[in-house]
Length: 381
Image 1 (cartoon, rainbow, N blue to C red):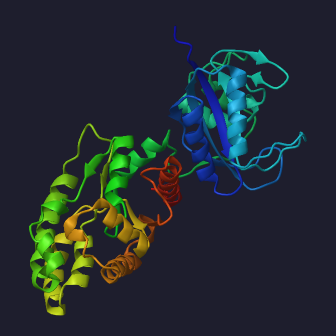
Image 2 (image 1 turned 60 degrees about the vertical axis):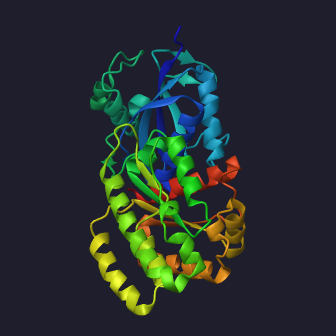
Image 3 (image 1 turned 180 degrees about the horizontal axis):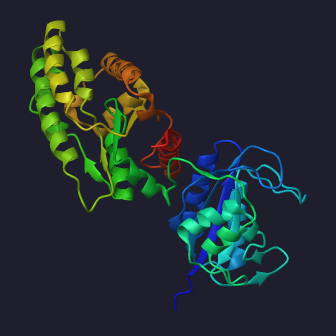
């Protein structure tokens, strides 16, 4: 027998990064308390009952198997984890996050620490408006009126304004909204490993660079001066063809795309390896191609220090890479960082992973995911 109940929860914040506070609360609710089925738009409203900064408010519908008091305790744990400290005073206060159970199905509860439906919901426009967006015909089991009627009859005439942007039910939904993420980094930084893990965990189309198939690569590491130009031209032709094909074909069974390279790396490596005249010719060809390729919503650059890069290269044991030296890696890293100086700030994210093992350590992997998540939220994509 299905014991899942439909609960409606009001969320609000008027301290710090308000929108991010709402979003992080929803992520935690989704991770620990049930399935977030619906999310209202976000509304800005004046503080209710006291003087303070404006609030951001929203409402969610949660499908949960938790009993009402267990749900309440879970919400209070989330509030505490986000930095809210409840006090014994009954006075209204500013808060980093506020989570209230509005409805728990049609259940009526009158207990010392929990009253459902929320006793003041019919007096609060900032609750009724987002509630009406996701549950317009849901009937108050005591007042016997639906959300729309309660909103029409509410005496609170506070001015509410809908703000831009949307909230996501979980991290997977956030990543899906980004459409395309590129993971970049120096040789041995771990970009393929990270892109593959994210693809597996969030059902993304994985686009991997076919570097191992390039016939010039082993020869290049033996004689850079002789093979640099054919190598870079070969890489450019292959990357352009593959990148254009892969990014233009949306997979209906995948949520978004993630790659372990961006085609701009061709120009970065070429500037390090080619002579001046060769590079100028190469750049003209590259610029012609680059204007037509799909750009990632977030360009993630994994920074590793040179010592760690050399360790990683040695560990993975590709024969043709063993002659790579620190100077070459330093030049490549400098090329990436110079490129990022010209890249739109709202689309680039540098993560220092020199001390992280995101392949073998779940906490390190979660740290990287959280960093990408928080960056996406601050950019309001």
